[in-house]
Image (cartoon, rainbow, N blue to C red; front, side):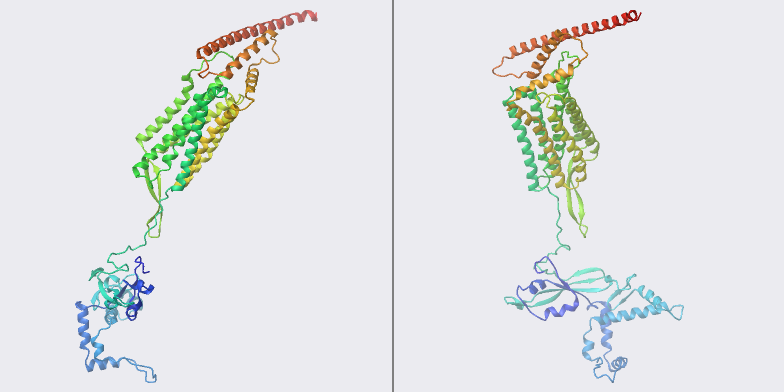
Length: 594
């Protein structure tokens, strides 16, 4: 109290008490009482027709005969020395007490109700009298009287109320002691306020304070701290991608980099950069941007996430699909894989995502909105959640989720087929781990995102963490093993792994009856295949003649093709000889028996 934020309104019982003393200036009581009010009911005021008639008739009773009659009706207690009967003199008739008009009207109301209830009968009970009283309507000394049906009390709209305003007296100016005076500022009559003069409030002004305290609204902003944490995660992913791309560029002549195809590594880095960039618009809300800016940020989030995811994981699918076509070739025939074949999965995935996202943006674009999620006891909004929404967004989300999760599953299947290849060529073990983490994150993260959708802070942190884990897992599992292999002193031993895979894959088994020449030819063919697979498609460099290298590679392929043809011919001849021997043994068996 006394701060200007609150206003005291007293009942009539403290009316005189406030004025009967002084208060130390700037004391708590002085500050609390200044500008306070008193609301009291009054029986009437001069100028009111009923009240003026009542006063006139009341004062006409000031004669000996009426006074003696009134006094004779008062009880007497001669044996009680403390009994002091009411004595009516001239002063009693000159000042009309506040309660007298109310008592008069109450008595008249009871009498009229009794008259009404006795119509047509000689007796009545209390309930009948009470019901008749509640139905009474008449004009009395205090104005128009009517009563509430439920309680029987007088309807406040029919009564007269007076508002007093306590202000510092003029004598208190410049003094350390303050006293108050009261002045009538307004009357309440027949359901309306009649203002006599402006009311001075506790803050010293005539401006009406709000009826309720200020509502503290929680807008559920992301906040500076959480926004900074999300942007740090974004920066970490981008730094990883840029660093690994530079490593690939600087070591592109390395055997492990050439075997892994630098173009695929660059695409993976690009995809993770785009996907992690979604954290930036995700961190924007109307605390730092307008509604239009927030709406643009809303629509950019699915574009960045889906396009980045598609680029990164479609490249994994394309890479493993290419390797499986080369090594899982039962006939060992020459297979030509063009760049167009390699790019098909990437372009197909991008086309699907771009088509769905374009339709979503054109037909039902996302926009920024706020929703009331909590109200106080006065039905005022105290919690407002901001979120991105659109009408009919669910079909687009389902198509995008199913399409990209399907892409992830297909890539996982291709990695599983390449599980027996060496790290130098397919990196199947590490790719499988990265994809397994991605599947696990999607399996757990997507339902949790649906659960925390109504909590902007939790939703932002969860989605930012999912993006960070997906990108970091893919980058670390793809590049860290290559870096370790690049600086490993035993990296030359990886040829034996490929030789073992090819020998195991295409060995004829113990039942073969191929001669030593066939074995030597197969060994030579395997040596050539190992040499070709180890080097892979060569990257241009300053110290290598690309034309010479292409010619050598073409010669190696021709030699390999000739040796494979020779191997097939020898295998065919050996099978025919074996069949002939078996037929001869069958024909000779009856003669031996004879």
